[in-house]
Amino acid sequence: MISPGEQQLRRLQAVTDAALSRLGVEDLLRELLERTRDLLHADTATVMLLDGDGAELIATAASGLEGEVHQGIRVPFGRGFVGTVAARGEPVAIERVDHTNVISPVLLGAHVSSVLGVPMISAGRTVGVLYVGTLAPRRFTGQDVELLQLVADRAAHATVARTNSLDRAAALALQRSLLPARPPGLPGLDLAVRYVPGSESGVGGDWYDVFDLPSGHIGIAVGDVAGSGLRAAVVMGRIRSALRAYAMETDDPADVLTRLDHKVQRFEPDAMATVIYAVIGPDLSGMTLSNAGHLPPVGIQPGEPARLVMIKPDLPLGADLGPPRQTSEVPLRAGHGLLFYTDGLVERRDRTITAGMRQLAAALSAGQSAEQLCTAAMAAMLADRAPADDIAVLGVLRTASTLGAG
Image: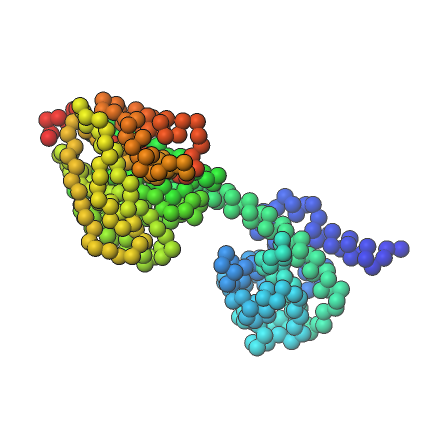
């Protein structure tokens, strides 16, 4: 004779058998809810998961009450029946549902009489709520509560595992979309780049950008968002896109960085970034630069040793608004160029950053192509060491073919 405990375990196994392991999150939850309805002789079953901020529970899957999902029902954490289950982290049963204890208009409109909800807990953290409802009044038993909680625990672990897998795939796709592309080929300019992330995520907050503008000017940017990993990369992507948008409206790099700073302070209040933005005129004879707290580039010119171009820096983006941003002019004759970089290339714990910049300049020389400049910079500063921070490097040289233009 089968004991009540063994019978309960068999019923639970019928709900969470191995066949569910092959399903995706949405299909898994739908199948789970249908089996849960049969198991508890309920008319509806719903899963509501906490959003990323933990502020609201979102209807994610339902059986018998699909309108909650279709209408995107959200319940604030701590409010109503579902919010109370999540906030308390314990089962809640309501024998008579009405507007005083339930927020969801779909649940009220379906004339559900009684509900039982339990928290979905994974690794000690509430991730959502699983609840069932009946159209006829019902007093749920302790055994009902225990069984639903067992199902919820299984569902929570499976959901978190599937969600983490999807998050990793989404993060990888986002990382790839944020990685800097190779710069476009521009007549009269020799360009080369390097990008090495310093975190395991494969992407960070450093970037370079080269683009031509409707006015015939060329924009060049190198920047570094404070922090590392995916979050810094997301902020970087927004800043990079905004810089391009402002660059379409003015050829003044100080104006572009001023607008960008306002945007960062308004919409990225916790972000801080250094950026150096240069604009090369249509005749390629020189570039105008504005520096928001970034390290100075290395200047290259025939017959001279490479040297740091000491462009006076203004405050970084995201710092307190200071005096008006400034611009500097750098001539760009045939064979002349600049190497831009982020601090990950020159900063080390065992030396000052100034010493690192001087070492970088000493490793470069005139007569090298942009590609050779980048190769020499990376070899001199990294050797066989893995970078401790993100690194972005961009070399730009004016080619000899443009000698007659300026």
